[in-house]
Image (cartoon, rainbow over all chains, first blue to last red):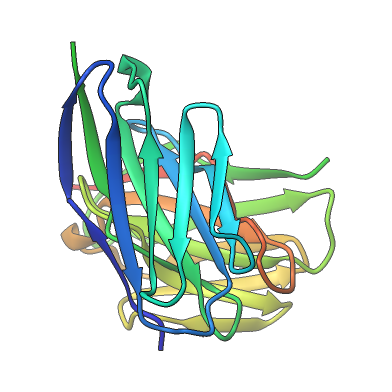
Length: 111
Length: 113
């Protein structure tokens, strides 16, 4: 079955710098790769997603890249701001269209 | 538009007591429904998912159970809570089919004392 690994588990960056979170997956049939942001004590919410027919997608300061050959995808946040501090989860769909989740990355933005 | 309701938001229960968390979805039909647990500072652990009324798949064997008595209602239960059941429980739904977003409820913070 699908397995998703996410790195790093914690990432600390200076405000204004960029942050990159990486995920790898095992099932080459996966087609959908969302990223969720979870602020402290709140529910995870989708911030961006990418499908297998696209290599990159951008939405303002966030972007996701997908390398299907290498089976990895990454979240890029530029010009980080304090409100970007949160836990970020990647996921990939399996053959039953269920989402398999990464373990999460705690992003800390230092002022 | 679709909405998901999960309650209660917080719950403190003694060891050995029963548990019932409820989740309902509005504005959609035949959704996939999920229960996740999140320990403090940890990732999302899928507990149960359901693709239809009365259809429950369990991902992790434990003293919890789930039921789907109606199309848009998903209930997480336990007959006797353990200390290790403490955590943040999240209900979620998605549309049937591929490549679809999961929408989460507000979560229930359960503390077993």
